[in-house]
Image (cartoon, rainbow, N blue to C red; front, top):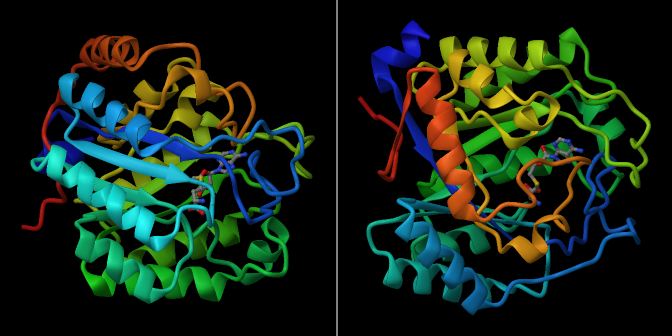
Length: 308
Ligand code: SAH
């Protein structure tokens, strides 16, 4: 906490999360929107929907928009670039973050040229065997690493990270995750508990714990003092005070949902996700109170990485 305060004081940055498609070509064993899950009611937001989310978010004080989705080939590079450009045109003082999975270096370069500022791509696990346990054979840790290196090389603020308590995770794999993070030295690290989703192969597995998650948040804050570290929705899902506990352990970011209420429940990466019934405005009010109650304060700025 002292280290976090040294760099970021009691400021908590907010990112408006827009879950713009739940179509996905991948089949990750843990994820609720995996290709093989036929129970998912699939949706895509239109450009107008997305820009409306940004407008509402802007009104509420958000200066970062995170476009997250499954790997949906309907959204061609051209469409993604068009989206980035319209958001940047409408909201020039805002940062655009992408979280749309593994692409070619060429695609990442195009998005960056179109104005994207940041990219979130959790490495999921830095251990090869564990990676195999979590993903089907067509996905590889080497490709994930290649993507992260390309993103950094291009000049994005980059986020890596992993789930806590995913099936097959051990002290050793976590140690490798921390080593990997130290080497990559990303601007952001997203970690949250694994939570089973009933219609996936891991539907009957154990969820990760709050204790382990907050311990790892604290360790990562010490390992990478300036890192932007969210107290994730998944942490808030396994414990009603989860996000507060995360903030008190070194996290300094929260990512409330800006997606239209009608699609929220459909973006079910895991079961019992919180805030699927609220409007964005209600969420931000609730969070301001929660953050205030523990002595922190939500700030309405882009919340860039401190490079000093
Ligand atoms: N398709 C994008 C976005 C993935 S969703 C990509 O590949 O990066 C964002 C993150 O949610 C994933 O990286 C994963 O770590 C997390 N996630 C997926 N399923 C989850 C589950 N069952 N419990 C907790 N977190 C999960």
